[in-house]
Length: 329
Ligand code: TXA
Ligand code: MG
Image (cartoon, rainbow, N blue to C red):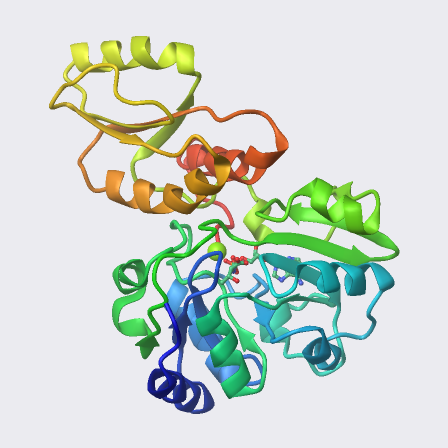
């Protein structure tokens, strides 16, 4: 969907006035504010119900615009930006002096991303500055991949929702940190580990010394309905047991329904990870509304193209397992 110049102009005026504007990116919809306006950034946290210690991604038009946000541009980061921007990659770097603490959660780093969606690019070009934006969902909920999802999540809290159609990727960006001479993968996404390694060599896994990325915490991206990941061979026996005790079930699988029952709502998603990832959040949203006791998700292959999907499913399944939703952004 192409940008409408009048809507972009309206969005820029709202951002300049310190208001919130939701906008499409190729990953998920973002809830944007002028990154240089701490009062506007504070509104993001209020709208989402998100703790203020959680840092935000600053969206920029490209590498040239990165300089004003960072203290240092390591060669690794330059190469990654050259290879993957604009696109679904966020790079965490040492922050420049003067970056508002509201953005960084008081940390010494800042996360930057140049999104590829034409509406996001038109907005950034017209606004001329950085746009701080988390995913446009309430804290702990599933990220929105359609304009209607943003309305459902945030309603009156947002001055304008730019509609850019359904998001192409459908899962949040890959996040890497380029700090202390190391490149560390903080969140898997559409840019895979081997794509990163082709550009910068070995990429470390996050460990206790890595910067905190709350989106990595265990419970996140969760529907309200309890969700369980089930191996394909166990799916049918599990369904039989539930139906026998009168339980209403929702299922996400890569094959068609083996049984028909009015207690069963079945969503078949793509066999390829790109199509599956694009449709997953919308499917979870819809299945969350069918009054099922549980959502069963057929497990996905344990290989790299499915890594981001497997990560989000694990976090969705962790919801409620320990009675708490922790650090969901
Ligand atoms: O695809 C995306 O990344 C979307 C679109 C809108 O760009 N944004 C997004 O933002 O997913 P959010 O806030 O929902 O998730 C960003 C994650 C959070 O887990 C946050 O803690 C982490 O990035 N993060 C932000 N700044 C960071 C920093 N300086 N160091 C480490 N992690 C950071
Ligand atoms: Mg989020």
